[in-house]
Length: 232
Image 1 (cartoon, rainbow, N blue to C red):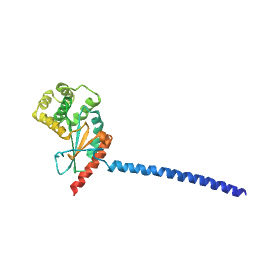
Image 2 (image 1 turned 45 degrees about the horizontal axis):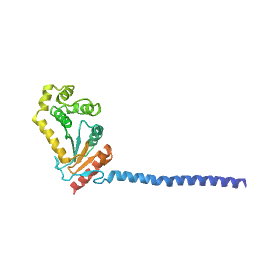
Image 3 (image 1 turned 45 degrees about the vertical axis):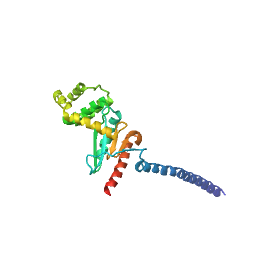
Image 4 (image 1 turned 120 degrees about the vertical axis):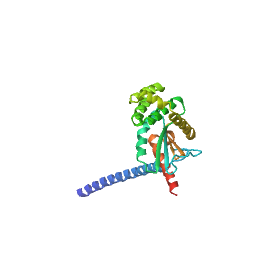
């Protein structure tokens, strides 16, 4: 009799625990499936007008044999500075059929000065030394760099002679490059920076994509669309 009571108690406990285990599994399974579903949507289903913008008139790319990804940025943009390590690391990981390059957006006087700084640094072969420090100085430290003289003083910190700086700053080459940057902005019609333009057809910005890292996920999605078109 005692044995029967003990056995009944043991069976009751096992049934209770068994129910609990199955109940937990039943409750958790939908969560797992839901999470997988969300991940799938995030990676493969982006909608025009919601996650990216289709450019009305496609812009010619610099190399039609590749899939072009262009970044528009500005030294005065904190979000661009935050985006910098993500976009550069991402660009390095891309296949050979992707042509990534970037340029300074220009639609006002301060941005024009920053664009000149970018092209002067390229012209004097000091871009690698100056790019990130100038980014940090303007976007993060909020140092006053608002004219040619203040910009020349900044370049001087990197052993760029004033004479060489002025010559490059006022050169036709740099002036023309800044004008070309303005024209690109007029064609791309960004709402801000940073923005990506994929193969001259699509714009990807932070607000539509849902964040800076998400911009790269949308870019990957659009690159794959263009890659499939080229393979046909």
